[in-house]
Length: 110
Image 1 (cartoon, one colour):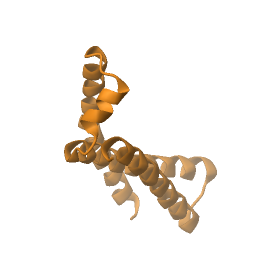
Image 2 (image 1 turned 120 degrees about the horizontal axis):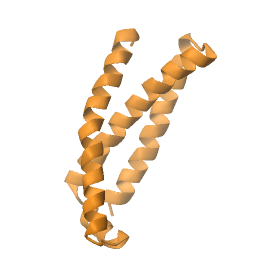
Image 3 (image 1 turned 60 degrees about the horizontal axis):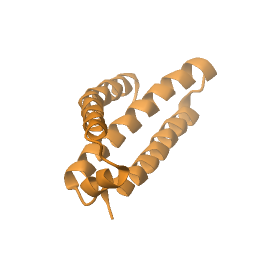
C-alpha cells in the first residue's frame, strides 16, 4: 500500500470510528446515569454478539487509524523509510489489534 492507500485507510477508519465513539460515549453516559455497577455492565455485555461486533469493529478501526497516523509521524520526525517503516506500521497495528481483542474478549465473553 502506498500514499493514496494509506490516505484512504486513515479516512475510512475515521469514518467508521466516528459513530462508534459517539455510541460508546452515549452508552457510558447511560450506564453512569443509570447507576449501573461494573458487575451489572459486564452482566449485560457477556455473551453478546452485538457488543462483540460493536467493540470489535472499534478495535479494528482504531488499530488501522493509529498505525497509519503513527507512520506519518515517524516518517516526518525520524525520516524512517522503506521496509523498516512498513515493519513499524504493521507492528503497531498488530500490537493494537491483539491488545484490543483481549479487551473485547474480556468484556464480551465468559
